[in-house]
Image 1 (tube, helix red, strand yellow):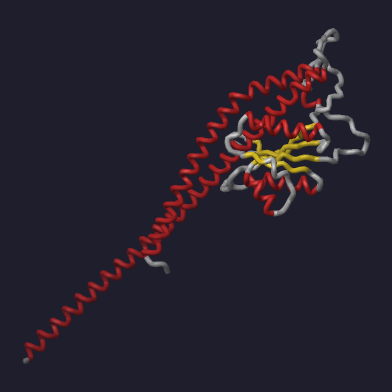
Image 2 (cartoon, one colour; image 1 turned 90 degrees about the vertical axis):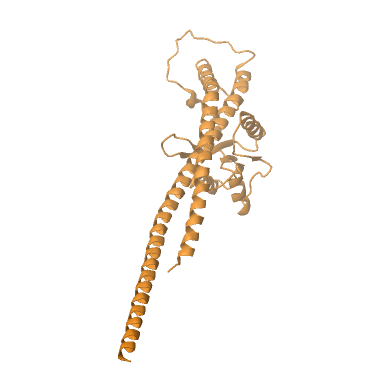
Amino acid sequence: MADIAEIKGRMNSIAETKKVTDAMYMISSVKLRRAKRELESTMPYFDALREQITDLFRYIPETENRYFHASLPEGKEHFRHGILLVTSDKGLAGSYNHTAIKVAEEYMSRHPETELFIVGEYGWQHFKSRSIPFHEEFRYSAAFPSIGEAEEICVKLLSLFDTGVVDEISIIYTDYQGARPSLCKRNVLLPLDKSTFQTGREDSADSFKEFFPDVDTVLNGVVPSYLTGFIYSSLVDSYCSEQQARMLAMSTAGNNAEEMLKKLRMEYNSIRQASITNEMIEITSGAAALRAKHKKIKEEDANE
């Protein structure tokens, strides 16, 4: 059984660890609120872009624009795949990173020639340590995502798509669900599917809109901005999910530390009480022995 000094040392160590987990919980909660505010302030612009594209398709029955889903021959599929994987820069976030990485690895097992692009140091180190090829020059932090960062990523991915390095690009990210558990998703970024912009609204037969200089030029100008917004919202959703996961992990760690402290306090008090009881027994026994000794001396003096 551990002695009092050892138990007290363990209690102090656990208490210090709990201070760290509580601080990390508070930091993550502040980061979460900040990221949510930034997303809410920028999303109306990108929602308006989506509505604009939807409105354009009310006047475009068909389009051969390169950014939209091209009809492939029967039985043929896209074979030059690209994946943009969003992870965090650090661990201690529960299953947040493991889930996203697992989805990516399962997809890559079905498409071995996938071009992998990673946001976040955790995913970067994971694939590097396993010697799984990915674009190492494509290196972005997952912390505090910005519009500028999303735009840079969008430009690079569009360049690869335009030059034929990949003919399909998907993004794997963790969708923030508020109070509900976050969900890891894989969404296709390119090519876009026209059906995702359909509203089901019927247009009048005389509806007409003129495009200048032409439809493709208009779409080529709007689509990159829309994709930038989609990537940015995915980065922020993932960042919010990361902070939520870290808050949950730190809360669980704090609760476990409190339970351990509770058990150690009981053990400490039990050992301390037993120690005090032993000391009292020793004192009582010593006093009784002294009394017996004095009594014996008195009896011997009386006999003399």
